[in-house]
Length: 101
Image 1 (cartoon, rainbow, N blue to C red):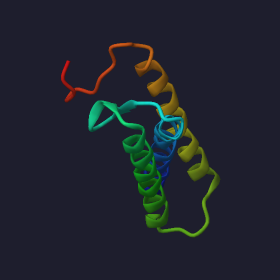
Image 2 (cartoon, rainbow, N blue to C red):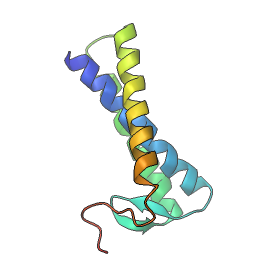
Image 3 (cartoon, rainbow, N blue to C red):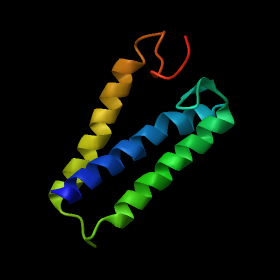
Image 4 (cartoon, helix red, strand yellow):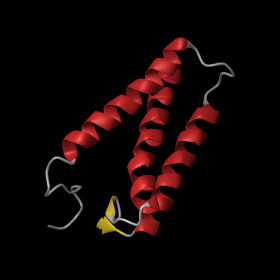
């Protein structure tokens, strides 16, 4: 069961990296945990940190071969991240709780 949770978290981190990498590569500002409007470089770095965390979680799994359930959990993590971020970004005033208004 713990392996499924780890696979889900790996999916969350990998899919969270996508918007940060895209915005950073395109030279656009985007929200990160550090600021409501972070520079493209900060976004690119934050995207890579998310990827590295995802890889670290995957490497920490105590198995060498992923099962079908693990792939489903990974995909579920990516799906949940994608949908929740899509809902979050529909609000033009979106911010994380610790960001100032």
